[in-house]
Amino acid sequence: MTREAAVGLAQAHFDSGAFLADLARRVAIRTESQNPESGPALHSYLADEWMPSLQALGFQGEIHANPVPPYGPLLVASRTESPRLPTVLIYGHGDVIRGQDASWTQGAGPWELQRMGDRIYGRGTADNKGQHSVNLQALACVLAERGHLGFNAKFIIEMGEETGSPGLKEVCAEHADLLKADLLIASDGPRLRAERPTLFLGSRGSINFELSIESRSGAHHSGNWGGLISNPGIQLAHAIASLVTNHGEIKVPEWRPKALPDAVRRVLADCEVDGGPNGPQIEPDWGQPGLSPAER
Image (cartoon, rainbow, N blue to C red; front, side, top):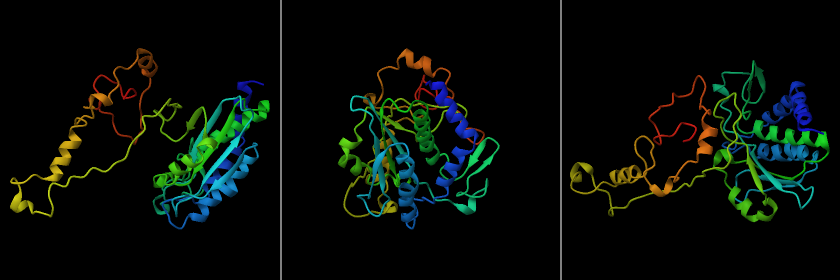
């Protein structure tokens, strides 16, 4: 019972076409969360496709209605081997952006998986049905090889990431004990290069907020009052410009790390960011001075 044997099972599963068959079945479900008519498909992806796949691996779970109607449901499932073992929580989303059928230039369309050379086409193959299908199959291969994982595993699959994840925060708060884990694996992000797997240890996160200025009541025409009274739009532009330079350098000292450890620099030294033939050219002077693209 070795790691190499489990990896071999995964390779054989892919080479046999079984993985692509699973992915094709999932891609065929039109889970467009931006389409208000996709409610049945969003639920079907969890109830008819994902829940049976998890149950086959010994998971128990439940589909939760979204507390923010009319958005899609969320699935929470777990497989517990021992309360003394560490727990891994795996995140994924089964919804996709609109299929944009008429704009599809490769393959047979967004809802039919097609392999062309070393590329696979179909809506959701890269965001995010492919990723969480890989995670699930990896667990399946470990279980097939040694009969147990050696840790407890949990899944949370949402169906509204492409519309801003409505309800996700509320469900996580309501089921905090059920979702408690030692490690979160969220396989929903880019690679630095297409041919090089990338593992990000941690996330900077983000906060969305609205900033508005009310200089005075009423509206005043710039043709009459320009130069005589302050312009809220210009004030806002200066407020944003006080945060970063035009090259992206962070100007707020408290937002910058005090130092980047040499060990981190060494790990990132050979990490090159490449967006492929259609990606933008990286501007060497753009961003934080003295940092490589990977370090930024």
